[in-house]
Structures are given as structure tokens and as C-alpha cells.
Amino acid sequence: MPHPVEEEIVALIKKKDKAFVGMIYDHYGSNLFGVIKTMLKDEALAQDTLQESFIKIWKSAEQYDPSKARLFTWLLRICRNTAIDKLRMKQKQAPRNIQIDDSNVNTLGTSSFDPQLLDIKDLLAGLDLKYQEVINLLFFQGMTQVEASEALGIPLGTVKSRLKIGLRTLRVTFGKDALLILIILILAS
Image 1 (tube, rainbow, N blue to C red):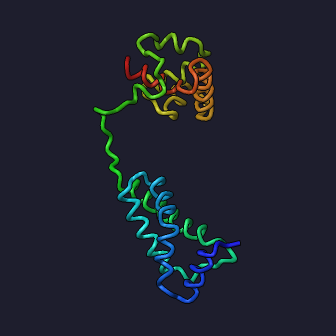
Image 2: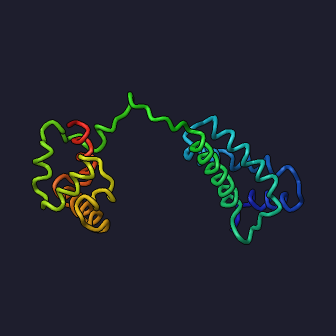
């Protein structure tokens, strides 16, 4: 059963009385702001988003149907969707420059791994020769999969399969970071 305040707000919406916006803000504003702020993690942007949400609420008030959703649920949906739109816009506007000086690629997932302690040949020695050949051509000689296929005289699908199996075998030894470890070793050599 709806709360009496909710019933009063719905009645104002149906009458097209502008007072409903103030009541929504007074009774639900802090909760809606909290949800938006949690999503955006930026207080100023959250305030702008809340204001934009209230404009949308005002413009779409006639569309509210109490038989489909409670008032707070409807308000929350509008605020949440507006916040999602802001996040998407923020992601599109985010600079996509790669900053090599600040790169932490050498530390990702390898906190207990020291590339200096391993020899690349030792790393690959545990693999069957057919997998070693493919990995050698692709990673150490810089060939494409098509070039490796031609150099080895085997079908492209076989090159792909051998690469996949070889990397899977390395993952058994080094865990999910096997490919990263291999790349670090290549760069270190």
C-alpha cells in the first residue's frame, strides 16, 4: 500500500500541479542523490545529474502509471538512467592517450613474479616441439599466424590450435598470467 505522501504526490501529478516537484525533492531527493553519487563517484556531477533528472521527471510526469511501479521506483529508474548516460558520456570524453612513463604493465598480476629469474628457453622447454615452434615464430620472430603457417607448411587452423594449446599449457605452470609473463620475457630479452 502506497505511503500517504506518495499518494499526495501522485494526485498532484495527475492534476498537473507543479508542487509535486518540490514534494519529490523534499521526500526523495536525498535518497536519489545518494544513488546517483554512488554511481558517479563525483559530487558535482551527481548534483548536475540530479537536477537533470528532475527536469526529466517534470517533463515525463504524465507518463507515470502507479499501477506499473511505485513512485520511488519510477523516480529511481529515471535518475539511474540519467546517471548511466553521464557515465557513458564521461567515458567517451576520457582521454585515451597511453602514458608510457606511468605504465604499470610490468606489475599487472605479477607481484610474485620476477622475469629476471626465468630463461625463455626454460619456459618453453616444457612444451612439445610443435607448440614451441609456433610460439617462437609468433612471439620471437614477429610473424603473423599466416606467415607462420606458410613457414611451417601447416594449415592456418593448426597454427591457431597449437598456439592455443601451447598457451594453455603455459597457464597450467604459470596461471592465468602466462601470456603476460611471456610478453614481459620477450620485452626483457
